[in-house]
Length: 226
Length: 113
Image 1 (tube, each protein chain N blue to C red):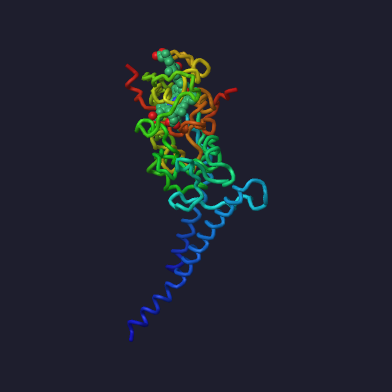
Image 2: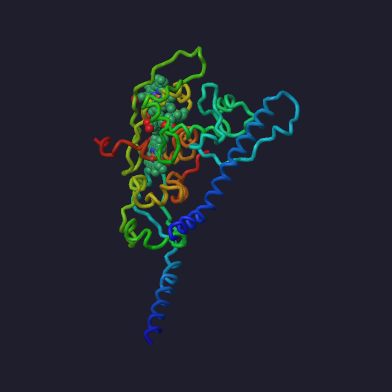
């Protein structure tokens, strides 16, 4: 007599959870159906424009296959956001939500949660080109490290790696406008870098952030004080 | 009687930190003068009072800073290695501004352009 009662009670306890789960399931499929019709409407040339209004912002869960991550023609994540904008174009422009789509493919991250592009190059995951111009001759990355001593008595010196940079960048991006190509000839300071000069032209903007001090300050002070 | 004693102790315990805080104000950190001069930055002013409002004394003392002015050998190297101001929950985290914002702590930081 007691056992069935217990079961009934637990079932009752779970009922709200079941209802909730069902509601989520239903609304999930509903959203899917809705975005499908929105896409179909968008695909139609000229016609009812009101149907093509952008959907409300949805929470993006990269692990959820039904979340609005757009795929490119190769089936790779290309963008998240406006379904009316062709994802491949969004991908090329680097616009919208595509960094979040990128995060869904499990690329290596640094300690700030940003994609660690340098590691991806080192691990042979990607092979960036220093120029988009097909007429430009390709140069192998320049294996040249330059020691840049940090002023002051404590902070570790900086090793500037040409190799990682010339994977991505042509010599002319930096020489001679940002840096005179001669060791010690650029009157750099951390104060200037932090205000967007020298390394700060890119780091903190398109390359890993300045807050990651120890990625640049890699050479112990004592080593250079011979 | 016992209750009164306990209450008065509690009152003192509550009032004491309130009195001692707010009296510390700003602390000038002028060690490592030579190194700072080379890097082109001036003395640091540490706003103790502002930090008291955001943190408990035990968050910093004595683990991060010995509570005696001048007793800590603070360096920018230490900061970037996760010590002192750069401790993991402090200016090396999203909780507070980053270490490269020189002028937020140092005086006489040259403005470029």
